[in-house]
Image 1 (cartoon, rainbow, N blue to C red):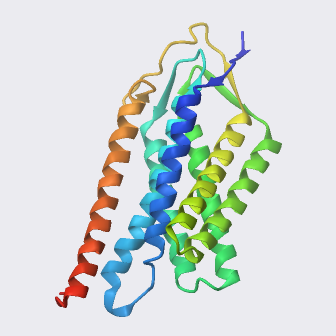
Image 2: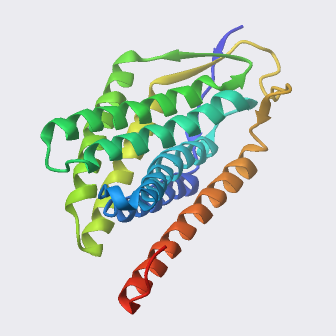
Image 3: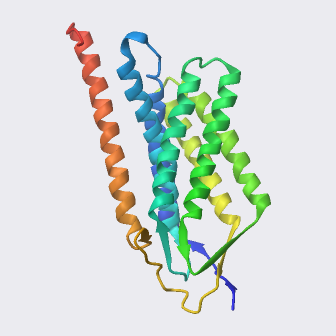
Length: 257
């Protein structure tokens, strides 16, 4: 007999998901200020662009999403398709980087801001629902499309505001405030989208964990998310350290190669 599965959340992990999103957003804001296209410094620009995409898309959106999924409590064995999970990460990073690139070429262009904001917002939506599509369990999802529409609207507005803040905040205190607002918007999109989903169990053994060659159990998800988040953080730290070294070298009069 089909039965709807009741859900709840671990508030500790909900708070952690917000904190992770805020950290990613803050690093993205720092990296975005270095996005000034220069013909003679293309390598530094691409590194900054990559850092921005990883920070916002990889940590601020993707890592936040799966930590939030860990916060979900329900009596249902779940797993995740490696393919959809991996593609959702690549999509989040690539679309975030492309959106920032569009705005960076002319931060004062309203047209570019709206185009990139729509792209970034839809990228977050694609990441979220692709991640949900990759869930494996003994049943299926039913959706409330009105709430899905609300989550998409939140993503579009929040993404556009995020891009504007990225190029119009100078002080560290303002960047922290902007990062807090961006993280709040990302979480609002995620949890609104989650409220649109109903988990319907169609098997007798609802606690059975899905298995398969390309299926990651929910028990292994924390390790995968932790390793990937740590790896992305190391890349960002190396980029920030390199930028700091380059600035120190410039002040000391050491020519750059």
